[in-house]
Length: 397
Image (cartoon, rainbow, N blue to C red; front, side, top):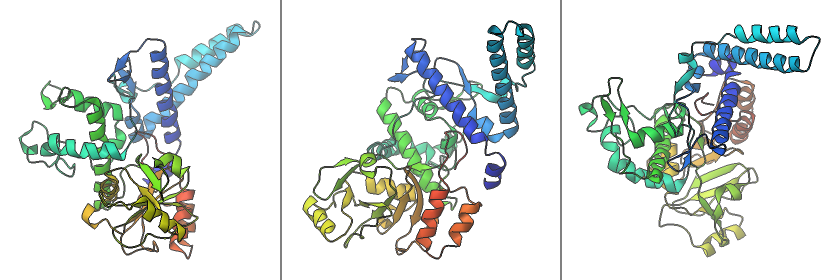
């Protein structure tokens, strides 16, 4: 992946721009009443969309599309200038026509994909939804897709098509709204044979989004267990935080774009606060400290901000690829942009053997970080120097 990134680093910004343009186009269509609603959100009204997943894989097609877009944009600009230029109007119009005619458009099947009304819909990734989705996944999905999401459930061998694994980059290369549509309306082979039933009527819209949130937890944890790190960048899930005896507030407001260290606490005093980050304490459900107890920790310089949303312990353990029963003592670091980046196992308080689970790798930042004597400082320097540049359907990191 590092070599791919270094050779075609321009693809990710291109995909980001194209994705933003499509979202803006869909919003404009909805505002102009060209598009209606689907499942409670604005619908994508066209049968096709840009196939960013194909452009990711085939840089040649991406390059050809970029040139075609540039040529077409140039043609449009020449035509506009020609409208206001009497002396050179004919020449400008001729140049515009030539630029548009010879624009090197690739075959449409290579850069357009089938779309559904929910293609560009999404919802926030939250602890509460992931916890709800875990129960629904066990009830409705695990028999085919397996408890760990690897497609090895007890019914998998009886199906027309073996269920795909969610452990890997699959989820990152599919739009959330299209995964939602597949769950609600099912999937079919080219001959019309049903390969997965639809759950509309059995699951609500909120239920389906919750299952997709839980799939993100399964994908992250499975990637760690396989030794490959997170297959796609993992964002901090939304949850509520209570500091000492103050009222709880949303994580995003409390964090305020600072680094975050999440620490799983089972017994004993919490770690001391550190100016390099804000510390979030994770406790098992039912074992949260009282507000007065957390306030006493703060008086002594200890961390006192606690995740109070039920399910936080299991969600972070799942994303770290660690069994919830063995999660105590683990630590995770999130960068200033809210992406989870690194993990330290229990018994490694100095981060000497930490694992960087989301990194491009191989660059100057990595070499400079390795030259640092302090493992934690090296880790933070590298995280800061290698920000996540993630586009849904685009490069992994």
